[in-house]
Image (cartoon, rainbow, N blue to C red; front, side, top):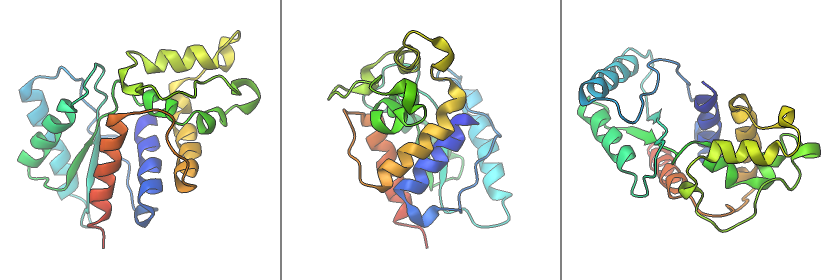
Length: 198
């Protein structure tokens, strides 16, 4: 649910028209990257059931999955969106950070450090590197923010609050520090949805 809440806030920042209109759902839970084709079909059908049982029309669906491996071409995103559309959800978008959502937090070092400014100040790199190429961004974030005192290190429960800071940065027009093709694909998906919202 931490990633779901974080993604919800990022969507609102990228498409203000959706603010207050997004419903984060716990079920069905996200799948592992290596889920079988049958598991994916069952999962997308359960998502479709949730969408079609909603009382109000649903403009767009955003479904989160971490890639957990290098995926520069966004194949897991494409496969997931195809499966969702095959289940009757033409307005579905897969949100697939590469490798983990923490790679996106590393794109916004100033905003991320605002969570604990007294202990995280200057902990993160300001670099033009491709953050999707970092094999374990969660661990990199933990190591950098826990410099000398692991009690202050990043934990997954921090994601929704970090997303709040990043959303504010996005709304203020702050540029990315580095590259993340998976974040760019996410931004494009939100823009596509936003263009259809009444």
